[in-house]
Length: 338
Image (cartoon, rainbow, N blue to C red):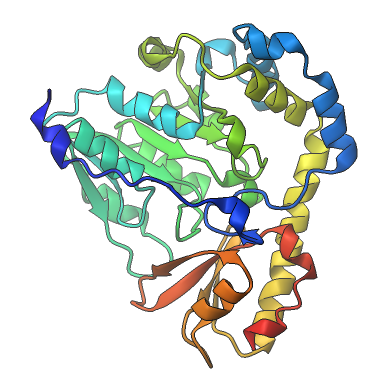
């Protein structure tokens, strides 16, 4: 066995979300899928979807049409985490480094530990990272730069110009777009035509509310895909997940409408909470931060309301509740937060 694996820390997610009225921890969709849509999808499931190995060619074609890419630019993965893992596996990382931000997806550190690389983290000085802070960390041992856009957990968004600044280093640049649909900003996928060092990872778990299906993908140059595809699972994703993702793309207007309503109602929720005297920090994404200590400790309120939540210390060194807004909160009048 590889002895260094004993020092790799992995945290298990043991939260039973059935026990909560609202689940605001991982940007999952709480709000019900409209009955007519759900019934239509469930009616399309047949026995072969459960008993046969999946054929994903139809889904690949729909993804390629939607993002205007070719099949050789695409690799389906069970969630975008597996896409990111595939990238880490494809590079010779031992005794080298990967550059990212200090607030980042925890699995970046896990993968660096697994493959014996150093994770170099650029420090936030406020709620938006200066891209130049990343550039200062790049050296001859840097195998790639990885940055979530928008970044989680801070929710800060990076422009195409800023991404191009990273690409022009010549280093491979991985842009993790797990939450991009929750910002209104377009994907940077189109840049792969000009920048073969760009790699983009995406998921249907967040804005499209299909976390249980475990469907994601990565997009890159055809040359890079020759390497990444070697790590492809024999059957990339499960058949039901593939079929539901096809259904999302066939009904994309309905799902995008949910995203837009989330934005609109998040704004209303922030206004209500501010009116009640709470300190709020908004983000470029679907969540905001509510200062833990106001007139009382908000954690008790969240527990009393049956809300699953997480707290975070922001760059100002103050603890906040990360408020992953979901439309299921529409009927909550927030009076309990007084």
